[in-house]
Length: 557
Image (cartoon, rainbow, N blue to C red):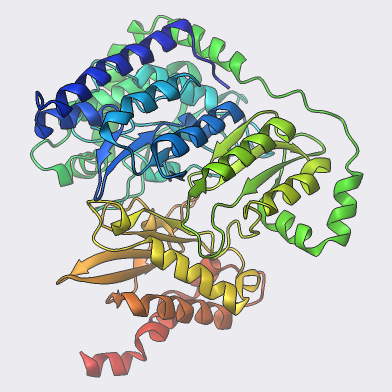
């Protein structure tokens, strides 16, 4: 993983020093809240419903054990003993006191972390496939590309006051685990006819108030052209993007209003102007960054202990079948740690759990962890022989739930329990759904089913691309939950279809039950997933289960 240079360390230290002085001026009244707001947002500090919230960048989701332990220390020292991992591969601390935030930032800097550009109208934390560098289906590890983009975009003088926030995602695999088509820019590594690696470039994706799937602006972009092409895209949008209406300011609206062909022509023209200014220094930097991401020294060991436990321990076998994925190296595996124990808050981890995960990474995982956009933690490089010991340790901390990809592996934003923008609660809905289907003992029979929940139209819970999406809204002071079906966050990305009228808080879990019961009765066999059944049958049987027969609905209307 990337290590800070002396420049990086000095840069972050100076930013922290500046912000410490700004905090002091806010506390003594020299700065009003309106004056302080843009300064704190540049350093990842939000003012939430009950307290400040600090969003810490985890670039492309990669953490060392030392960094995870430091996050645990920060949670204990300045928060309430836990952190919340987000769909942007960040971690949020929900209860810091303003005067403590500079100390938190200094503590982060000691382990080469920061909160720069995790908010504001800038290029945000670059996300990546959480299996990067380990996946068997990968062309190449995309994290060096993500690090190159991070360095290019941090404090870029032209892009600090964009029309709106800007998000970039990168994957090196044909299987899209980074939701690239729902980002302002998505980069998918591909091979051309000559076998050379480059990128399919996608622009104009995004969820929120106006959800859109991104459009391909370049089928193949050589690696050497990446930064000038990205700069061309962002600079074109920076000029065209709406600043008169924040709801129409994202690049997805610009692409929609102008059309992808017009945007492509503008970007290509701008690219021709910019490319000569990139004299190769970016490629020298890229080569140096690549060296930091050399794969671990994989060991050639016997997998006998794994085979024995897998054959004889049904609890271990269930965990492996659900949470463990094939690795590119012989004898190794990718182990996902679920932060979705039934009834728990999705994405939350206590300080003790963080320390345990750090210990496992140090002992068994080549000192590396990943944060997934699905709010779980990944040990990307573990030998199969060590999986029984890892599973046993996870069980002691309530981290061994075997539910990755299943109905209780729910993505949920903090909702109205924390967020000042939220219009409904998300966390209790997620908890009740997970608990209910655990009680019904249907989870394994249901199989792959992605539920995603947002507490407001901003869609931080990615509900638009959930197989089942839930959006909480305020209807005359009462929480109301809309349901969408058929969303897809993968390489076949799609926006879910709204089923109809929303449901009250106490109606939403029974509604989800009816949807699942319909799926179980409509599927051709146990191998047909929810999303495949929905694509085959369409909305009609699900709508009937939710609202009754069409004739009855018409009479009621």
